[in-house]
Image (cartoon, rainbow, N blue to C red; front, side, top):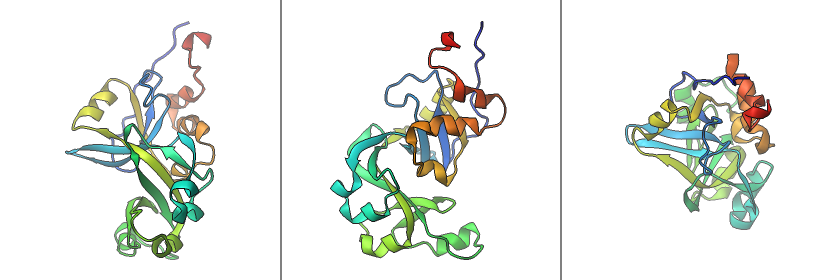
Amino acid sequence: MEIPSFSTSSAAPATGRLLVATPELIDPNFRDSVVLLLDHNAEGTLGVILNRPTPILVASVLSGWSAAAEPPEVLFEGGPVDKDSALALAEVRESGGALGPLDAAATDPIGFRRLFGDVGIIDLDTPSEVLGPALHRLRVFAGYAGWSPGQLENEIEQDSWYVVDGVPEDVFVAHPARLRADVLRRQPGELAWVATRPEDAALN
């Protein structure tokens, strides 16, 4: 039986969107990964892998931020670049009003840069006692993923990635091992089929 193939999503890469590894992507750095795009512009692309927890507790390396860490309270492997550095994504607490994007950004706490919805990057050099009370939840990543100008677009054309919209729960998922399948399953049309595709298509 011939196994059907699927082209990538028609969505273009943009800040806040997800890259979901296709079955054709066998690079061990990104196999079965889900990547949140943090920046995408003419100078290149930055992102973090959302579904690779490590055994290292946040409390053991960044004790001041551990109280806000969402379970599992461990560092996540954000990507193959600069693994000795850490960056954190956080969701700020609700403002209590129906603010538009510009109004919400104007009220953001110091040390927080909004990406999409109430999710953004925090400056870990900001004292946790200053920024911490404004945070609903947080996740810390060691390293990141990076692409030079045009590199990601080429990989998408080669069917290495599906590009789909992200939601805050993707960033703070409690069961990272299920994230890729869950993201694909909620997509419309045939793309949802990939969530149940066996690793060896011949076994289907």
